[in-house]
Image (cartoon, rainbow, N blue to C red):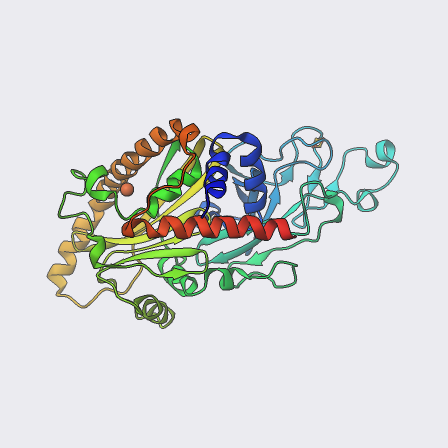
Length: 400
Ligand code: FES
Ligand SMILES: [Fe+2]
């Protein structure tokens, strides 16, 4: 990575134009938008961000669809809250859209527009949606840029049991994009769980937050009391798989463990034995960890809200893996403890993440001084991988 690239790397952390162009490019990459547990019922929706803009994801029966959150009439946002339930109806002039994103209800259409809604052909810009377990991913189709006439887009959707449809111009389905992480995520994030949830509004660029999640060097310095020196995972005992633009941290792991874990998850026979983290490009991570006798899963989504602001959401729940056999008395005791665990896990996660976010906010203040290459040690190798994936994604976008 040369001097110029390093300078460019920090530019999107301090220059709104560079940030907007980076986000537009990353809007074409599969991005975690939310969880199916956020929209359990027909017509439930959530608002989220993609490609530097607002989008919303809505359930229509068993199907989940996504659209840019902009009315085709005069560009009022369709959704003006973080979540809700109901018809796709714009609050400004009450245009109503169907689940294909087509405007099907237009007040006084014939009189004011001289034609029927069908002939007018107005539609919302589609977001391609695919699910892996309860994880909902979305991306803008590459052929549909922000300047494209929204009336010409093709609809796309997914039932939450299959990979993305392959009839777009993009080259990878969600399953191909995730590689061996696909069966792992599907097993860790399977339907039926009821997660706890915390959210943080961080005054720092999303890349600084992602960097610290792939920084295997900082725990002893940033989390010495919350993790305890014994609790800090010794990176020398770690195996860090790299797969596509993603990476992982397997404590007590070795080469081959990633594929083995994928196979075990596929066969529904995986049993957690040590801390595992998967960092999925561009902006989410999932990890499992032990709390007393119980294994937990956390999913963290980093949503860029501005060049110096990121909304970080974390969902956490008891890992949905089979438990090893134990006596009924032990089981009863564990069940009693587990009633109280979510509260303590939430407090713990909030503390750990706040320690990280304080570092990121301080680094945001120094963004103007990031003109040289960082000095990366062995335990920061995944930061270099993240940067390579980032440049690769931007270059691919420019080729289109
Ligand atoms: S701007 Fe949405 S109906 Fe007019
Ligand atoms: Fe940390």
